[in-house]
Every structure is written in C-alpha cells, then in structure tokens.
Image (cartoon, rainbow, N blue to C red; front, top):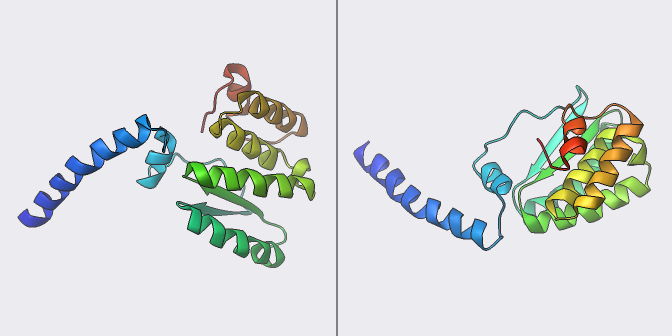
Length: 155
C-alpha cells in the first residue's frame, strides 16, 4: 500500500505541472482537463438519449463510424457526442454541420450543442447565434437562458 501511495504522490507531482503547461500553451482548456479525469457535471439529457464521449481524436473517429449504425438501430433516440480535445472539437464541428444539414436543425438540443462547440472553438458570436436559434426551437437545456444572458458557456 505504501508503494502505491508513493507512486500516486509522484504521479501527481508530474501531472499537475504538465496540466498547467497544457493550459498555458492552450493545448487544453480547463473543461478538457476536467473531462480527462472524468470530472463531469450531470448533463441535462432526455430519457431516449445515447451519450457517447470521445476523450481523443482516435475515439472520435471510431464513434464517427459507429454513430450511423446507432441511428439505424435506435431511431427514436437522440445521440449526444461529447469530446474533450480541441482537435476533436474541430471534427465535431464538421460532423455537427453535416447533421444539421440533414435535418437535425429542428432539434433545440442539437442546435444548442452546436453553439457549445462554436464557443469552445472561440467563435462566441456564432455560439450566441446558435443558442438563439435553439431558444426559438423550444426545449433545450436549463442553462440556455444563462448562456444567452451572459454570452458564456455553462454546463
């Protein structure tokens, strides 16, 4: 037990400075670091939601090929894809644009999440525009009004 605790102590001595460097060099955000350590707040999802999380670009690429099959087998379910990597946000943006072009633009939840992706990528004006669209569509997250009021992402 002593060896294990000593190992954990030494690991944290390395992990904390490495995390600070990644924040400083903008390779990660505070949100992405939290999600790497599985520190999630409870998401406001519907009963018929399949939640897929990709912690790396490789996982995102794998999910990108699996999601069409999920949609085929679970037609009445919403699919929520979350990512924790800046590069994966870029890919998620492209994937969401395709989804929105194929009919998901009528889902307040999907449109709101697209706004969240834009916010994470630094496009604040685009995020606010998508959040306004989500508000007009109806049922979205409990944070949507606060996002619109403050122009900031809340999760």
